[in-house]
Amino acid sequence: MDTAFQLLVNGLALGAAYALVALGFVLVLNATSAVNFAQGDLVMAGGMLAVALAPLIPLPGLVLLPVILLAMAGLGLLLALVAYLPLRNRPPVSVFISTIAVGIILQNGAAVLFGPEPRVAPPLLGDGVLRLGGVAVPEQSVAIILVAGLLIGAQHMVFARTQLGRRLRATAQDPEMARACGVPVTRMIVVTFAIGTACAGAAGLLLANRYFVTPTAGGDLILKAYIAVTVGGWGSVPGAVVGALLIALFEVGVSSVFSYPVALGALYGVLLVILMVRPQGLFGEAVRRRA
Image (cartoon, rainbow, N blue to C red; front, side, top):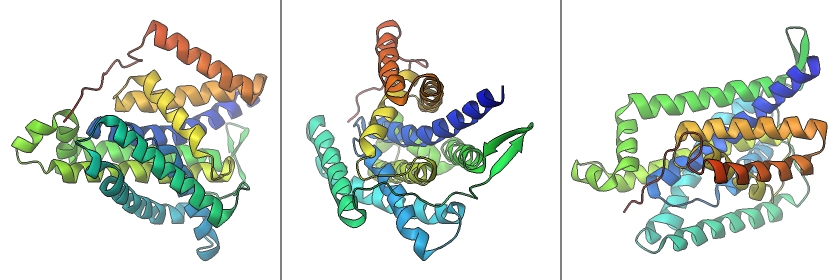
């Protein structure tokens, strides 16, 4: 029972970090109808930024989090201005290629600056263990769950309760109508990129302590985000979060019995079954084409 509870906590922690990755992915997808293939490499960039800041600011990762959120939001603004807006009226493949190019630039930049070896970021609070119901669980896992939950909740509150959120939702739902109603659609798309990239950066900080970070880590993460969005329902924000939690719990559970390669292969097998049985995903919300 103790081992099962520890696996559950670790699975939820991994899923919470995946949820931030998938959340940023689906926000940009909904706002632009374009897939941001650099999302995984942006997670890596957030982790590497935490690694770089750790010697300069020798404090827990929780203190570094606001700095990383702001820096990554700025990188998201740059991404929108360079890789999306100049190509928004071109064929969709143009944006796909531009975001792939950004991801490759980030990978090679990280390799030059940090080398290919795995790096570790500071823990959010500490490296100790907590006793939950008599079961010892890592502090970092609990902190990841709490911090990711707060960030996801904050995103929901902004989108649901603020004027900015209403404009962002209007842009995602129908940009032409939103523009006709006076919503600055281009500005809202840029803000969406900033929020999505900040989510990726936060996930990078959360993952880079327990799971390390390498320049090539982004490829696996973008696949996990893609799977989470597919499982949850293409275009569904709650579906992306639920899908991320499900695939992380599946991954941790199967890995504990067999191995990680077996878990990864089984995950793709389950994805194929879901696509055949329920291609619209759990929440069944399709993404519409947008101008």
